[in-house]
Structure formats: structure tokens, C-alpha cells
Image (cartoon, rainbow, N blue to C red; front, side, top):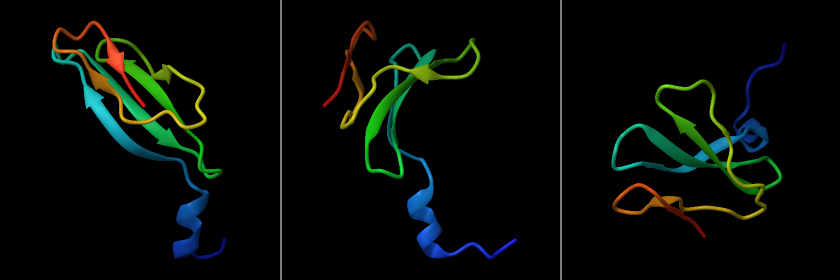
Length: 74
């Protein structure tokens, strides 16, 4: 095994923005891939693993409407 180097951070997926629904039972976040593409993922408190919400390539800044029924994003 080799030692982890700072440049290795560029090869990792990273959460770059997140939002929690006003009800608190759901969340959406943006994931940046090593290629630079971003997509949105959505999860629910009571369900299993989060699932993709969009396919990108530049989807960011998820925000919930005040009633939590809609998600806006760039």
C-alpha cells in the first residue's frame, strides 16, 4: 500500500451541497465525481440507502420548498 497524498483527494467523490426537507424526514445532496460532474441524490430517514435523483452533469444547490413538496436546483 502506498501513502495517501493530497492529490488523491481529486480522485474521490465528494458531497458538495446538501439540504434537509422542512419535515426533517428527507434530504437531498449534490455529489461531485472525480471528473467534475455533479448529480443530486435523495434519501429518506426511514428508508435504506440514498438513490440518484438526477444524472447531472452539473446539477447543484438543492433546496426544498417551504412545504417540502418540491425540490429546486441549479
